[in-house]
Length: 316
Image (cartoon, rainbow, N blue to C red; front, side, top):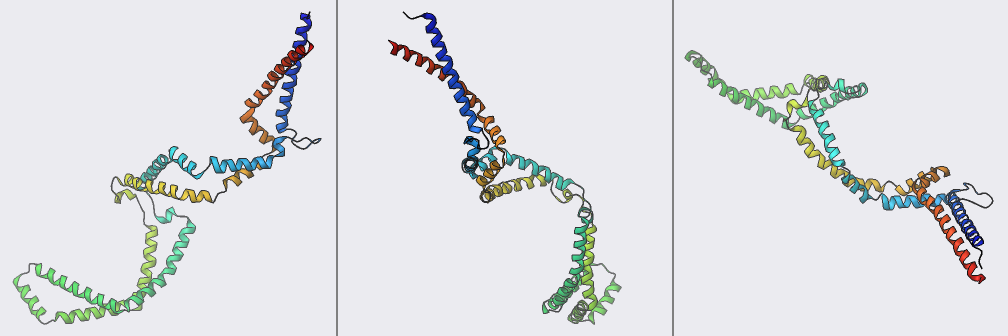
């Protein structure tokens, strides 16, 4: 006859020993995933031992599956980036047209102003040379003759519209009858051409470039809204946002192709210490690791109970 006390004692002992054995074994297996960090007595943690391969696998997974070009573009569309760009451009457009601005000399750094003034000084002789070459051409002489003739005609039309007393009309008619319009035009045209081809005119052209550039640097810009319609900011944003977004969608794939994301992630992981890698892995899988140990205790106890049953059956 089976002793009840011995039966339950043996069953309990087998279950407890099996449970402890399974739990400790599972705990050692989990620890061996990370420890020891360095090879010790022939033992080396799985993660430290395969850190380089783990880094390469993570990099390839991230670069080829998690951060593909299509995924990034889709995320940008879903993230509201386009709306954010539209809001920011709207703010910039309003600021651009409504802000009172001083002269370029006040807005630009002193180094930039110095370079601009130097460029203007150097541009003077070049402009003078270009001016001299232009006025020496036949085209300029033709333009001068056309200008003189047009001015003469406009002067005559203006003169005929002025109401004059009969005495003055008679005097003007008498003087005008002795002049030939063609001769006057020819003389004036030659005078204009000669004046334009003098060294003085050439110097004035160079000075005009220098003086005009300096005046432009000193002239206040003011508010651009004075020269623009009231809806200019809105229209500017409406035109700019599609163009900016199109550039993002067009240029981003080519830009991402120049970035080796897998290699970048691999280098980043390799730069982590082994302790840091363990923290990252445990931070993601600690619940599952604890479950493995707990299942070890449960399965160990179940195996202990099964072993007890088998032994009893064999004793019969």
